[in-house]
Length: 120
Length: 108
Image (tube, rainbow over all chains, first blue to last red; front, side):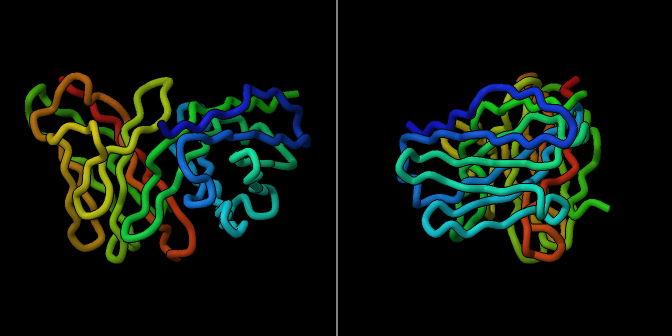
């Protein structure tokens, strides 16, 4: 069965960076894009970006461009999200999700989420 | 302003029909997908494309589109449908993805 499993919670100080992992299984990793979505406490879902494990192509949300970096390791079917220059506004639950493209576009499987807290 | 806007709250009586709307320019060109999120849980895909439900999603969930507005309809709302719902599509530029502002559905 399709599974996406993220790394554990993180506590970071302002100005630091965080790198989260998303290990996938149950499907051909290079055949799907992986996207990252975050949700601040009590707020809505925010698109961060996607990556194609097939060719490394990426797309980043305009408000995060320059601070976020998405990578993959096809040997372990794992995706990574690194966010730099953290501020308290980056405190959120971060989700990785499988993005299906083609005739329709949608996120069909989601990981459990990782809580990142940025605090001094 | 948000690229995809939703009404913050929709209230529906048990067994009645709830309609959740999502407005945005990109919806004229692309179909929205819809996600249900319950407290403390990851979002779950409930609808995508013209009107396609993933396996396991009840047929009381349906979708439609008219102009710049996409709609998710819950016909015969159940207590377990109480949740936050988000639409998703491309942003107004078409170059990035975006989520709607979210709708909290309360089943009375």
